[in-house]
Amino acid sequence: MKTLILILISSALINNVVLSQFLGLCPFLGVSKQVKTAAGMGGAVIFVITLSSLCTSVIYNYLLVRFHLEYLNTIVFILVIAALVQFVELFLKKSSPGLYSALGVYLPLITTNCAVLGVALLNVQNEYGILESVINGLGTAVGFTIAIVIMAGIRERIAHNNVPKAFQGAPIVLITAGLMAIAFIGFSGLI
Picture 1: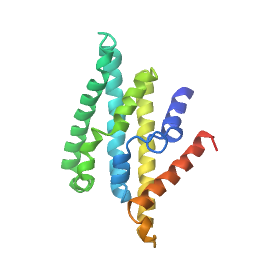
Picture 2: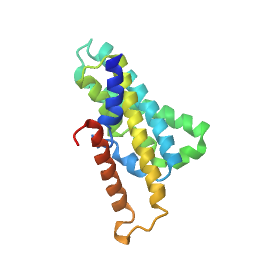
Picture 3: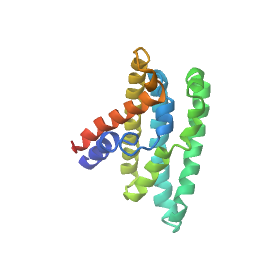
Picture 4: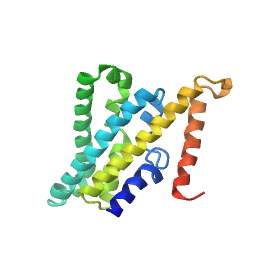
């Protein structure tokens, strides 16, 4: 039980997928303009990463390893992730058209989000079992959601402030992301 809690906290805060490993930056920077949209993207990412961690772990441990096809893991993982994203896209299109249109092109980009594939590959690399993989996926997705919602909150506040012209737009967003990354390094105890 202690190991699972450590995996959860470590993947969410200490090894934050966005701010420590720099994976999943495209949706992090693109969808973090409003807290509501960022929270919706975070929810979609939580669902996809957690479920893909479960599915890829089961497929890897019970099919690929059993038949000595481990070398196919990246291709199989991408197919599983793509199918899950299609499911999320259809669900959001029917249940929440506003959120679906707000997420726009970034929702299908979850398929190519390197954070999602990275978690599946790290689960294999760390030799996690099914439960550990799911916990790692959940922690990673929660960490992504924390980072994107904090960034959206900061960006909403920045929009109402006087920012020097040279720093408006992408420069201030990247500076903010850098400062957030420095803050998250504090969780690892390096500072």
